[in-house]
Amino acid sequence: MSITASDWTKGIVFSILATIIGGASKLAIRKSWLMEESTERDGIMVSEENTYGVDSNGEASRSPLHNSRNGSTKCIALFLRLSGMFGMTFLNPLCGVLAMNYASPSITAPFSGLTLVWIIIFSKTFTGEQPSHAQVFASSLIVLGEVVVAVFGDHTNDEGTTLADIEASYRKPAFIFFFVAMVLWFLLLHYWVTYSHSSFLKRFAWGVSGGCATGIQNFLKDSLTVLKAKAGIPSYFPIMIVFAMAAAFGGLLLLTACMKRYDVTYSSAMFVGAYVFTVSIMSAIHYNTFQNLEGLSNYLLYPLGLVILMTGVWILVRERNVEDPAENNSQHAGAEMITLKHI
Image (tube, rainbow, N blue to C red):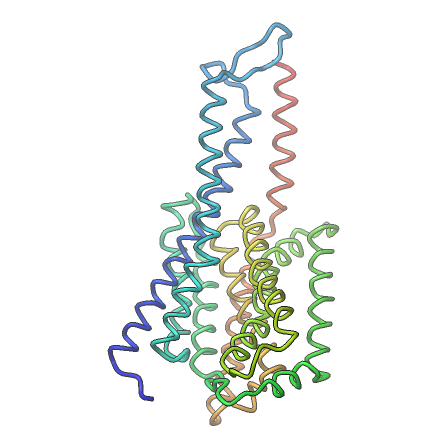
């Protein structure tokens, strides 16, 4: 069935709407963490104006007005975070599904890079964080790499795929190796986040963890293929749904945790880069991507797109050598508590 101009126009509109929702959701989550961070800092600072007094023991105390303001700020921050997670969990995927219903993924996929564009444009306005020139350049490379991968990648669909084909794909040694490798990779990321003294490794691990988790898309895609096959629901279908939900929600939670520590431009760009790279590796192993490429240009430009994308990721990680902001805040809070004791 051919796609009319009206259909693919609707597909593009839903794709752009999905990127707007995605960008706004990420900005809302980052803003919520910044508001809570500001409240916590304010909670340990002594002001001789109207927010603090001194009790009978000579200790700093907060006024009811100050506590009320902090409570309101925390409620707004929680609302922003939940709204952002709702947008990324339900509204963004809904628009993506509607877009694919009207247009081919080869048409809609390149528009997904607009999420980073919205974040770079509105980051200063909504979060007060101005993306650096290096971040803008790196994000541009990631968007370019993503577009090249989408345009010159595998555009075949799952038409004609049977349950037997799906079951056989999970028995392939290469896929089993991929799954084991991903488990080991996440253990390594956890080690870097928890025990590493290198700010570079911590920054990298937090940046890629969410995208790597969300990039395990085979369970979601194969679950949809099972439903489309109309050959009955196999016994392993609930397990596939659980793994698909775990990858999606786990990736979202990791991205949210990353945005608590690092600015929204870095967090979102690293998420996109890790997501596309993980999906590409998974697809090459599980869906034989390279066997489905058409023409020499696809074989050359598809890997080139991944190289461009990973170059952007590398620039982001190497842009600056900073300590974990959570540690810095802890040290800052400790210094302010010492100051309070001397007042």
